[in-house]
Length: 308
Image (cartoon, rainbow, N blue to C red; front, side):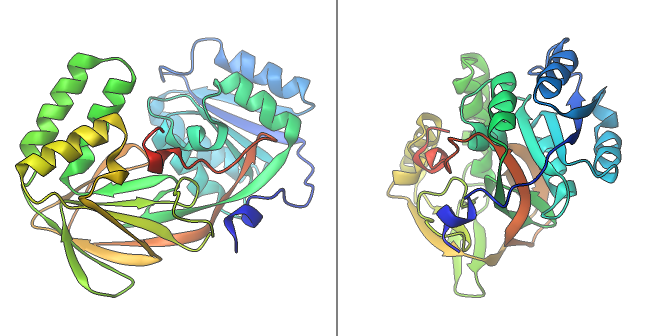
């Protein structure tokens, strides 16, 4: 199905009941967020129950919220919680509004752009536009924006620190990533094809991939610097956001694949760090969940261009 078609408004759905789950300890939430969220939802005509919980209670709160079968689930928390909520909702559960309440906010940014969470919620509730969102899976863990497999995944932490103006943390993360570079190459196959080698493999979902005009798979970008100089150049391109155009990067569309390395595989999934036992399997998920988005929503291609 063409990506533009999959992101057209679905048949009108009556959204009356809603649940909201907030991470009370998240830096992007704030002490008055629960009351503000309830006020916005009530003004839009929703019957909403808001739960502001501690981080260790998030999974239980999300399970309870989804089990209540509301029309809409609103989440205000970090990237990991947004991903978990999307997985719990799935394609047949509540419509999801994952608002930016964390550090990187990769999924909220892809859906709502640079809007602050109150504006994102107001605009989405005003439009009542619902879109299908595809995604991917690595070793049973889901993602909906992008995944990075391999030690260069560590550059993501440095880039985020630079985006937030934390230059000292950026240097520390960049130094750690540099020291870990070339510590072990990744081997991978795409769609049961040829075996390739790379320093890292990035898997981008149709939501952000500029190479995908159809909702048919993942864009796999292999990062393969051949020496320390190319590795430094690619690392700096990652920091400045132009990594995809580096000559050490090659891309291909795939629906599934395998990756393996000596020891564990470092990874980031939608901004969340992971370590997987080798080997790992990854695959495309064409119908991951349904999202409530503003009327002017368009699939972002900014991550692939380096500006996300």
